[in-house]
Amino acid sequence: MTIFVFVSSLLGAMAFGMPIAFALLFCGVALMVHLGSFDTQILAQNMLEGVNNYPLMAVPFFMLAGELMNAGGLSTRIVRVADAMVGHVRGGLGYVAIIAATVVASISGSAVADTAAVAALLIPMMRNAGYNVPRAAGLIAAGGIIAPVIPPSIAIVVFGVVAQVSITKLFLAGLFPGIMMALTLTATWWLCAKKEKSVVVRSFSGAALGRAALDGVWALILPIVIIGGMKFGVFTPTEAAVVAVVYAFVVGMFVYGELKFSRVPELVLSAAKTSSTVLFLVACALVSAWLITIANIPAQVTALLEPFVDSPILLMFVIMVLVIIVGTALDLMPTVLIMTPILMPVITKAGIDPVYFGVMFIMNNAIGLLTPPVGTVLNVVAGTARVSLDSVISGVWPFLLSLTALMFLFVLFPQLILVPASWLR
Image 1 (cartoon, rainbow, N blue to C red):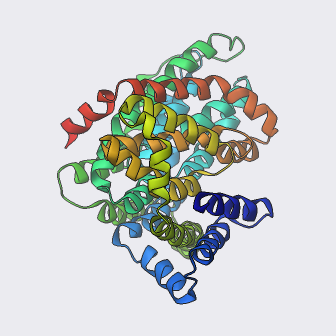
Image 2: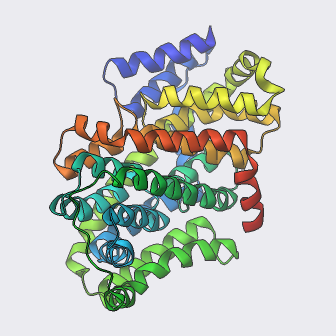
Image 3: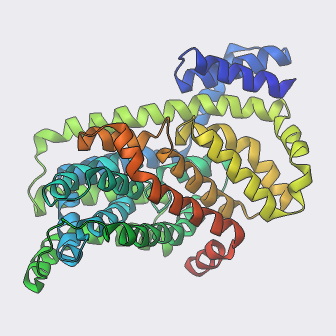
């Protein structure tokens, strides 16, 4: 009965068009009424305590770092370096998109912001060069979902807070899967690029590469600073976010000179708006998470999944399929906030490494950003590329299927994540 109250109140509120954050709050109220312990003071207290969390400070700082990076010209220079490296081969701008998406993802950690930045820069170039625009848009959308997996990922920060798992370990464990996602997209694009007969192919220029690398070196150093600093214990993920902000500000304003001081308040406000949405969602979700624990829903879910607990691989397979289904209807962050407190006790009982599960869970939810009807990243690319959503959906399928296959490969062989993660630690 408790599970029914939880699911029906949540889905019912969403069906009536209630925003996800308020739907989660309504779900919490419904659970409290069902348990006979409704108290507005408890609601307010759990909301405040939910966001009064030091690691969550990384969210607004990484958001601001992304804004400063785009306004300060760092994103543009990353694209130029990638273009000088591989833009001369057939389908070269597709490889540029993958490289740019990976490097930009390792700075800001926001799928939507990174996708918008790369799409705005590359879609016009790919259209003018004669590429199939829906296929190019699909590739850029698929490249954008590397951001939630590779460090520094905002989604991983939120998962680590809710699941009480080390964010630093999650960051380091997400590095290799993020690179594997980029390589998978590269192989898929290579197959697709064979059909791009009308694309202009220019000659390689070492001098152009040298100039682009020299101009973009400051932008390319930032991911090394962030990941290297966490790897060697120089700073925590939250401190890494502050370092990213200061670095992007200094380079954008004083090195590249493209960031104007008059724009800083606008960028801070934009980052604050986005961050407030995420943090309010976290606050409401943690009310539901607390009540989920009080209502003993995890134990009931564990009982339902009991037949699979003795087989970790089979259990992971079942959970991944479940998350794929949920991901078609919910965005990444709500799915993480709703399902994490329910699934973590099951994962613990089955003896699955929580860091491995966290990376897999986030990767699955990131893939959900590409699945209609919600497909947040698809909508971003469609708007930026000025093509219909149906066209982007038709173009993204090869990349969506290849990334899903990679995810299930990680299910069958957990060592592909665990072994590189142990090396990095």
